[in-house]
Image 1 (cartoon, rainbow, N blue to C red):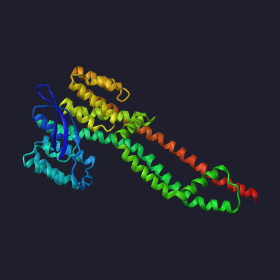
Image 2: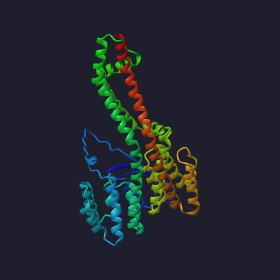
Image 3: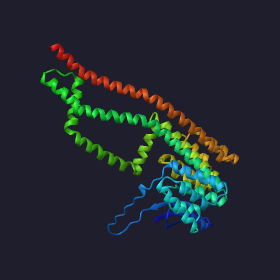
Image 4: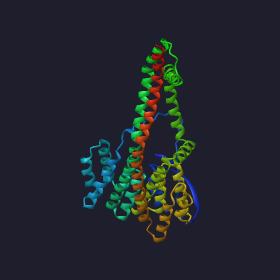
Length: 406
């Protein structure tokens, strides 16, 4: 159970702040809607307790791959569309599932349905696997009688997000592997090879040029202080990771990501594509407009893009236009998105417009990641060549001095 502090708007128009326990945000939204109040905002509070308590959770071990969730939604949608009862369709998927964790979760979801819970409520019991987006779209499908269509839309949305993430990750994987290999080779060279060569040069009283002295200095530092450097890197990494999770850390890191020369525009387009795709999927499934914007803001990880969505949600509640908020933040979201939103608001086809925006930026990100991979390879080769060249000059120059002395 989590403890929430939330604001609701009463039918009389009064804004009231209240507190209550709920299993998750989705259950809280459902309870608020059932009471007839209008949801305004919510904040989760950590429960305090007296004494020392140790609470060990193994939820991180119960992972389900994105591709498994995509197949689950797609196959379930197809079976429900073909006329199979939901409980029987889940039974078929449970027997077909290769992932042990997913098999257990499907069993629990089916058991919940047999006990009288709705499908969406049963899914909401597993927030680590089924996101708020997933649960909300299922809930909307149940309410409108279009569960099969909602599941197919969920599968499409998850697949688009998965492909987008895979493209970006794939573009960055190659340079990351090469850089790690270079660092490992360099450490081995400075630890084992360089000291042997330097000892020979010093024993023969060869005058070392400046480049060789640099290599010798780095080698001495690694040999004498290597362990301390390793500990310092680990401590710094731990502190940086903790700091990155704070509000200040997120603001600074996410700002830097946006301002980076090559990655900045890519980050902008990835967040634009994800925003458009998520909003269009939720609206297409029949989810309430305010709730759709709220859920989308939770999907977006960058705090600056999320802030724009939160402002858009507030604007909608106050009777304003969402496109106006996006138009005022063109440094984050491109003007194309706000213009398409404006057209959608005027014609009543904002879901279709957002789908078009999502496809455009997903294709653009796909092309840019391919171009990035093409550009990165020669750049890395030049860097490697420069490093090898510097090392070769540093090692060969003393040998020439030794030959000339003989």
